[in-house]
Amino acid sequence: MEKPRIYTVSLTLIPRQDTPVVSWSGSFALRVVYEFLHRARIDFPKRAEKQFSVEPLAVDGAEGYLLTGIVGRSGRARVREVKAGTPITVTAHFYSEALASDYMFSIAQDPNLELPSGRFEVASVSFTQAEPPQPPKPPRLAVLRVRFLSPTILMFYGSDVLYPSPTRVALSALKTYSRVTSVDTRPASDTIAKTIEAVGAPRARPLRVDIGEGRVIPAFIGDALYAVHGSRDAPLILAALKLAEITGVGQSRSLGFGRVKVEQLHTGEAQEAQSTPQQ
Picture 1 (spheres, rainbow, N blue to C red):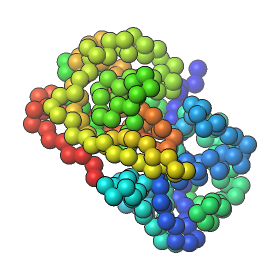
Picture 2 (picture 1 turned 90 degrees about the vertical axis):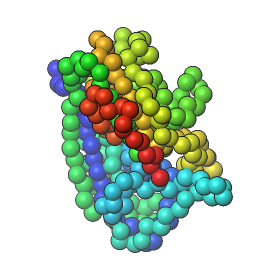
Picture 3 (picture 1 turned 120 degrees about the horizontal axis):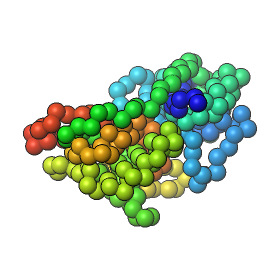
């Protein structure tokens, strides 16, 4: 049986005109992915569960994402103009080799792109694949710093959870790990409250994000420290959280929400470690 993999495709787009990004940059990135998939006769209904996740835009090799569309105190969303000729990176992570292949073939057929915001040309394409991380040896106690690099939305039975709830983050990561690997993560999900908890005070702030088409949605950004108790299910939870660095966590990951960075700290650092929310 073939091992499960995640297939990552990154495009460098060159805008032929000055391009204002007036709403959430992840919406722009998803529009690019949708366009090339549509050319391959692949379409996803808006509310359908996607077989991929998308990262927000990155511009001209700059570190971090282009966090446009965040609504300030004035009620206006953050806008960024990308000058003509400035490279824009669009990265998508596919859970299916066939879907990734169709996407790349569509790009190869015609690297030119016409969007409402203007004309773009694909200057380069990179492709990587990775196997999901395997559960490590059971730790006595693992302390993790989880940084939420883009706005994140967690849910509890249809209600927004606008802080880095360790339970919601871990459950989301376990669900995706099961989807990608076909491993049954339900036993770990059932005991999640006994296995992971936030330590210290999470440094996160709520915000509102304009995702386009007149829609403004709530989210949060920042970081938190989580302690994972060395129980039977801890290795699976750690593997799922590591995979989340590729797939993201929470809702609207196809829009670039829920991008995370997970760093394992030494046991005992929980009290000293400081957290600073992303600006």
